[in-house]
Length: 143
Image (cartoon, rainbow, N blue to C red):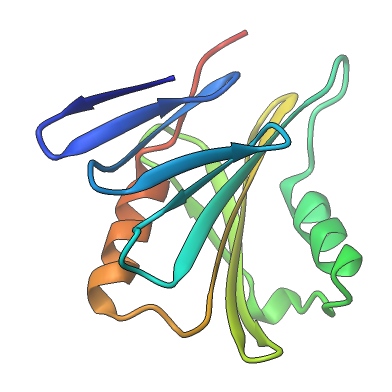
């Protein structure tokens, strides 16, 4: 579900929302939304995870994702942050097979998002700002 206002559109996931530039396109493939600038060369995908009775460890989730993709998890390269909504996050960037990857794990309680941006090249300053603004807009709805 999405709505547009003032140059931005809001995508509503199962328990989260994210604000994106209005010109970005959205495709949902196998229940995973993908957001992208049709004139760009990268995509931001968001995997929403929720489980009953157990909280997520976002660092463990990030490391699990990296391991599944044969990437060594280097805690020295991981950045911890807090979004304006209060969500805690951890992020890492890397280049594999000449592709740029930025993986963010965001979590609160039993809800976790993996926000993954990948591109043929390192994002320029303008694209990096749009990605950063989109990630900073993520909010969880309480279940």
